Length: 317
Image (cartoon, rainbow, N blue to C red; front, side, top):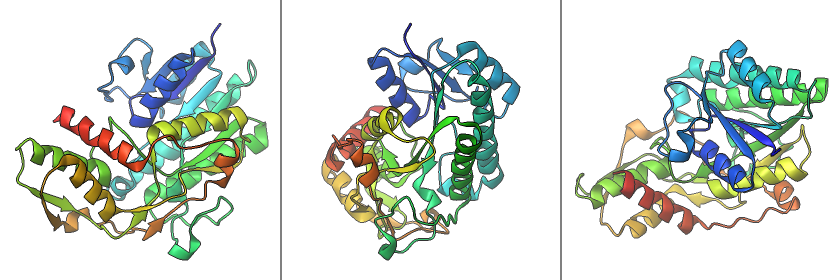
């Protein structure tokens, strides 16, 4: 019998790529998604997707008992740092309580099998940092300063507690900014690509609205991120946080220029105060020594990723 994987948040960008990766290797893949969640990926819109809210622990327990997965990939979350300011309560409830429910159910499953759980932790946990703190190592003190970052720090601590107290094999990837196709325009790259696609197709004036272009971020292609996290599941140490990143940062202004070049458009750049964040680190750059030590080597360069994202938006527009 093939090994069975259960992915919460399977309709999200990372969840979809996990599903494709595991299926390609012969795993039986099941997913959990909210009743309102949708996907443009036809492979995710089938009978293997269970409609369930992770905040409903009893319902979640019934499905996990029935499926008895060997691996649980927990991606379901309020996943946007910027949106967490306007959805603070929802962010904490979904991310913390939802994770607690997943871990509680996985702990019960331990009586039947040696289950592994991978939690979507985040670089936002590092929080209040300066350029001198970078590249960020996993041992650094966490000082999150956004509701999202705080919720993810809590998520990680829950995972460690269940590992330390109950011996549950919980893996803790601190995910830096994952970029890929099938993502909503809630991040700078997706927002830029969407606007440029609208401009390219004549549906918008050649004027692109931007927030802070001076910050720099460690972006990783979602395909590389999934490969790194699968490597973590195979070779990593449970209970130990590990950065999922490239070790290289790009200024947002450079990202915009690359997307403009890819789109072959001429645009006027307009700063929009509504796109500015209350807290925005000047540099977010990770140290990827740990994941590289497991054999991880990125396969996609930043231009590859941005080209795919732009053409994805052209198809969506």
